[in-house]
Length: 340
Ligand SMILES: NC(=O)C1=CN([C@@H]2O[C@H](COP(=O)(O)OP(=O)(O)OC[C@H]3O[C@@H](n4cnc5c(N)ncnc54)[C@H](O)[C@@H]3O)[C@@H](O)[C@H]2O)C=CC1
Ligand SMILES: O=C(OP(=O)(O)O)[C@H](O)COP(=O)(O)O
Image 1 (tube, rainbow, N blue to C red):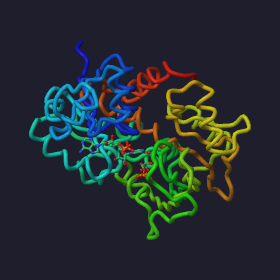
Image 2 (image 1 turned 180 degrees about the horizontal axis):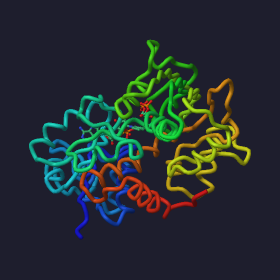
Image 3 (image 1 turned 90 degrees about the vertical axis):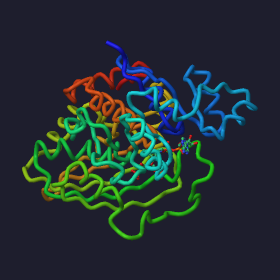
């Protein structure tokens, strides 16, 4: 069977990881990536052997930098079965006209408004809805982490309400423009943050409210969760449930910070120290007065990557069963670095 042809439009934090993850799958291939500037990321893409496509206006700059160009972004899109749009938030929607004109399937990221298309995606919670779809938006990194925890809890015990406070990382490690460097910033002041409403784009019946604060760190986001369940359960039941999920890991071994999780990722030999599973702090799981509490850390640079791969598989009808796709994706990602 021929491989699904994937184009990655935008090759930053998310785009370069999606490209590497597609490369690791045996049922899809990277037919090109796009870059606007001839910077170090463009050079790495060339070194990895990805065909690099650029806007017409950037051709000269790439030529001057000695970086080979395969064509324009429009030419790349025309060669693809599906485009993963990884341009910055609010830019992705400006590419929709091109995708519609060419008639190519497209996936956007969580920085786009939920209105960019009619389907928000999470592999565990609503894979079926994406089967054969032309357009989908993989929800943001925090929303993905919330869906991964809330969906199985709701399936098994019923979720009455969710209250979550998110301590957001200020910027990614390679980001030299974003702050704060010495403040805690309410993000936003007016509640709720976008995450609760975003979970509802996937699970509309969930009663959830969220608040977010930006902190001067680049490692990971941290969620403080409080969930009221409909049925009674024990701490051990929750641990067993989380261990059974394909993209949740229980973190222990003396780890009590996001910094140590990233160090663990380095020690595991993960590509770019990526911890694409939600990292639930095992000993934080507690039940008090019938309510569940726990902390989970989300590696913002990588947790949405496997979700993009599953979205490709669902939309191009490569696999009907979400758990089979999830397992195939996870197995391929584990080719780099150890599992734990
Ligand atoms: N960085 C993160 O932690 C996460 C980001 N996201 C979402 O993923 C999307 C991408 O974010 P990042 O990768 O962080 O952004 P980024 O800024 O690291 O990368 C964006 C890339 O797109 C390129 N670009 C800009 N305009 C373009 C255009 N018109 N055509 C083609 N390429 C263009 C930029 O040069 C850059 O290489 C956003 O929607 C963001 O909200 C989702 C989860 C986590
Ligand atoms: O999707 C993310 O966060 P979010 O789930 O809080 O929207 C990413 O960390 C991107 O966040 P940014 O918009 O601060 O770069």
